[in-house]
Image 1 (spheres, helix red, strand yellow):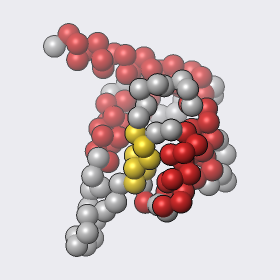
Image 2 (image 1 turned 180 degrees about the vertical axis):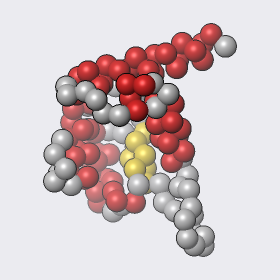
Image 3 (image 1 turned 90 degrees about the vertical axis):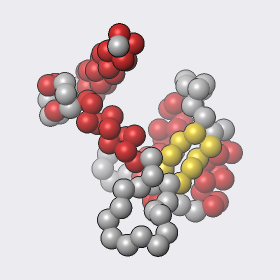
Length: 114
C-alpha cells in the first residue's frame, strides 16, 4: 500500500481483503489514531468483529508502554531472528510474506516440541 494512504483508509482496505478468510478473527486492537465512536461502530458493523481502541493509562505522564502493545513488539522480535527478515531484501511482497509464514511455522513447531 502506498505511503500516502491514511491509516483509516488503509485499515478498511485490509479488512475488506481479510473479510471471510479468517473466521477465528474476533477482535482487532488499534491505537488511538483510530479513535472515534462512530468510526469504531462503523467498522464493527461493516466487518463483524470487535474493534477495540487501546488507550493510554490515565494519570501517567511521559512515555508509557501501551497495554497489549507488547504482543506485536514481541512478535517482531521473534521474526528478526530469521536472517532474511532482518532487512527487506525481497522485491516481491509474496516472497516476503512466505518468509514470514515460514518463520512463524518454525516458531509454532518449536513451541509444540517443547
